[in-house]
Image (cartoon, rainbow, N blue to C red; front, side):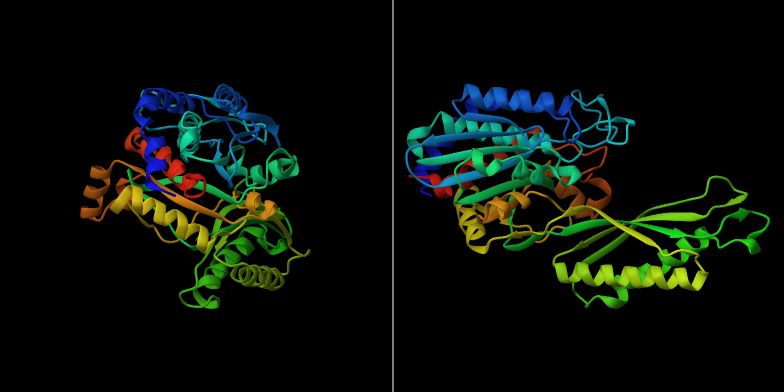
Length: 419
């Protein structure tokens, strides 16, 4: 990327500031759950169409893709996710969400952009507007992809299955970013594994029901589940190589309906995170061995059942692509660009470049007021004072978050499209 091309595009950034902030506030106030992003998708499609993009709607479910070509050159794909979470907002913002929706289980739930996807959409729309109005500064094709249902782990795959490859020219590179609890105005890249792979496992163990006063006639699944939870704590501590990243969380236990009834089964739901499939496989082997062993020790009358769901791929940033973006970021952002290191969260974005067989990189964008963050860091209370993603209090500051996130998209894209 040449500096003049980035400067030529970003010179107009001040002119879109008010429009972009209003778009962001509107998105934040009207969040939608995965595969229900109809209002958001309609807003996105309308904006792209007005800018001269070739627009494809309902890709997968509610996915939107815009293609803008100006001359010959590389094809750059940039993704933003659109969905929100079933969280009741507690930010106190004047544009806070009061939305409710019916989730996949038919429950009425509150909805909030508690993960910052509204930032991603606003930034990509802003970058699209800047690139569309500054075409002499670049050459090639810019693909703006707005993905549904990242939080459900299947939005990217459903766009691929919905014919994405036939709607766009094959990208030379795919890009994505995510706002995180770092100081606003900063961006961070990292080559290699950046976001962990993840999967959730639902385990059903069987007992023999009885009256609470007659435990000798039962095989108590509550006790069985408790023993399993305790033994599972040894998987990471005693079976994984020291220094190897692995997380095993028991997030849910469901057993019983009444204090004097011993149920006939229990359900445990586990979440696994790792930076390699080999580590994930070792955890799964250990989990199944422990569960089967505890069931045998308790005299369980049936074999346990294992169901895998919500699988996220590893985000493994291509070293050459990441180096190219990192160099462009350093040239534009100076000391505000750095390496944020590996993150423990997970994403399904990589299903898209993997299916298209193109290299990719994914970077982090700071969204917390820098003075607030620095004060908390000085006190050593960042984890207590700074709400993270998925918190009901997660509220990225509008600026400089939008300005930085929009510039990051433009600068990264122009690392390939710059003339």
